[in-house]
Amino acid sequence: KNEVEQSPQNLTAQEGEFITINCSYSVGISALHWLQQHPGGGIVSLFMLSSGKKKHGRLIATINIQEKHSSLHITASHPRDSAVYICAVSSFGNEKLTFGTGTRLTIIP
Amino acid sequence: DAGVIQSPRHEVTEMGQEVTLRCKPISGHNSLFWYRQTMMRGLELLIYFNNNVPIDDSGMPEDRFSAKMPNASFSTLKIQPSEPRDSAVYFCASRQGSTNTGELFFGEGSRLTVL
Image (tube, rainbow over all chains, first blue to last red; front, side):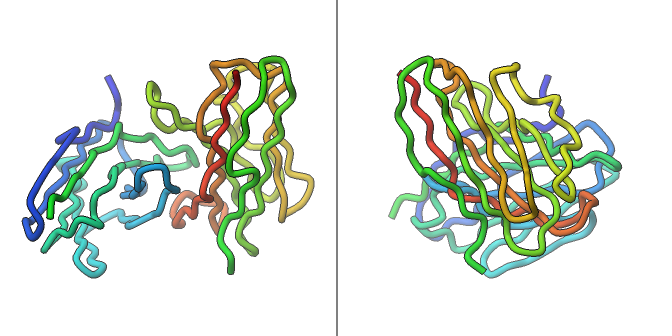
C-alpha cells in the first residue's frame, strides 16, 4: 500500500468548474508538495506546505496535519490546467519524497 | 536563472551501450536529486547529493547505475551497460538548503529509450 494516496486517479471536467484533488498520507511529515506535470513535459512545483493554506492565482492548497490530508483546488478551471497533479511528502530528517501516483486532470472547453 | 538544465533531452540507444545524463542545478542550490519516472512505477528517487556528497543512493537500481557530482554546478548519471528496462524519463532536481523544507526545482527531464 502506497504511503501517499491520491484521489481521484482521473478527473474530467468542463471549463470553469471548481476542481478538487485529494491527497492522504499515512506517515508523519515535515512538508507536502503539490507538483504539476503537463503531457510530455517537465515537472513544476506548485506548492510546498506544512500547515494551513496557500494560494497562488487560481490554485489553492490546504493541509490538515491531524487528519493527514491535503487538497488542491483549482477555481475557474481552464483547458491549460489539463495535466497530471502529483502529491509528494517528505519526512523529518529525510530528504526523500514519497510520491502519490498522480491525478490526471482533463478540462474540456 | 535558467533553472535546472538537463541534457540530452532525448536519447535513443541500443542495449549494452553506455548512457550519460547530465544536470546543471540552479546556482546556489546545494541539494541535487536524480529521479526516474516510468508508467509502471511513477517517480522514484535514485540518489541525492548535499554539498556535492552522495547522501542516499539506496534508490539506485543496481551496479549498472552510477552518479557523480564533481562540483556544485554539475552532476552526471551513468548507466553502463544499458538495458531496455532502463527506458524512462530521468529528472534532475535541485533545492536550496540541506533540510527538506525547501522548494524543489525540476529540470525538463531526459527521455531515454533503450532498444
